Image 1 (tube, rainbow, N blue to C red):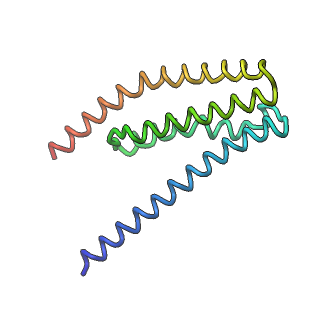
Image 2: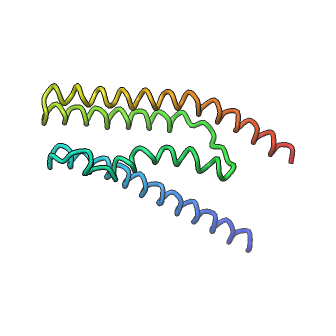
Length: 147
């Protein structure tokens, strides 16, 4: 009886975690849409969207730091990585199309430059973080296998 109750509690906990994750992803995309609407529809400047930019840019950093603090390593999920890449490509494409529609070719060139700079920084950080994470994961696996 106790084992069945624990199993139900774990299942409920997984469902709660899944719902929380989906809610966060929805908020993340709504934040991106908010930036697009503010920049292109309401013709606001970057300073008026700073909160959304901070949220969009610092969220991936948080998801790299927090597992380190907790001492866990996630398994490599190539399917998830592909979904993230497609998602980023889609958001970048939408941003460029809207920039071209609203501001013309000069706006597209500015956004392409911005995206290239951000992409370069992301690739450079990824080149540092990914090997370090693989090494950390290996050490954690060795630590846990000794116990």
